Image: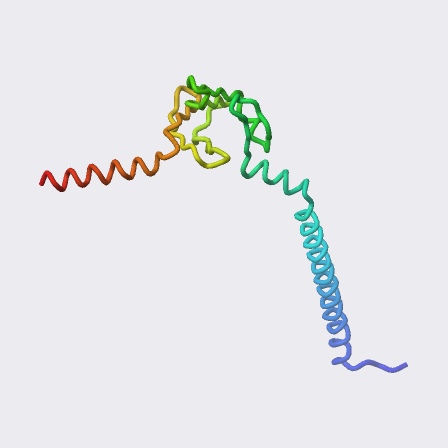
Length: 158
């Protein structure tokens, strides 16, 4: 029987321990890398799924499309917040006022836009409802003209 030297008695278990630690770390790193690659692939697959994108859109930016009678046409998640939409028209049948009644108090003004982009609304809050009054198709131009006219009058008065 061969007797081991004192150096061999020290280094053999030490090297065995170091090899074990490196082996465990290597296995854990490989598992981590494999799990990371699997999750990346799974997330990438889910983000390409139209149903997942639809659910995310409902949560991030809910929208509601309604007609000139206040009937909900398309709901992209906003109907859960809106109780009713009332549309008031003038004698000609043109929309004059839109009242949005939320189910709960909305601290932030809802964004109301016309799909063809020709009508501008001015919003004000009445109790828990938001009332949007039509200010005209040329509201921005008219406002700019009024401000320029007032500025010219003020300059001429000086």
